[in-house]
Image 1 (cartoon, one colour):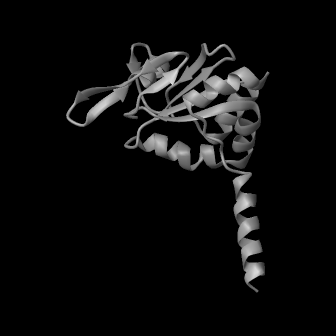
Image 2: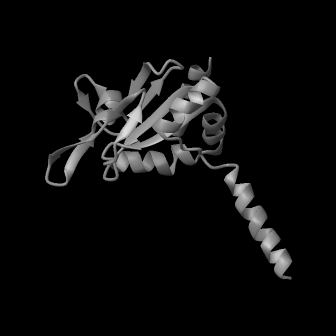
Length: 154
């Protein structure tokens, strides 16, 4: 009986693991690009942004989107208020405080600034050479995101 329960738990864990979105780090992507070139999709968000949380709960939970992101792209879920230093493209980016417990990460500004301002959520797509090829800073519904992924795959 114990073996059966353990078997059920094991298969439950491994089967759900296959349909989870693989979230990469900037440091990881630097190395992964050496092995296999792919476009990078960076989802720039904050914890307080309602539209960001809605995208996380809907768009990034869709199985078709998860499969496309995992197989064709490198996906980075990036909190714009991340406080740790991040090294990407041989450059170190830091958190920049702007007030009392308020600030933004330099890398979020680098990748998410559109028309001299940053808004959340922002999608930033980098090509295989790590150049920005697309930025979008409004909530993107599941069906629109699927269309974007198809166009990026071409």
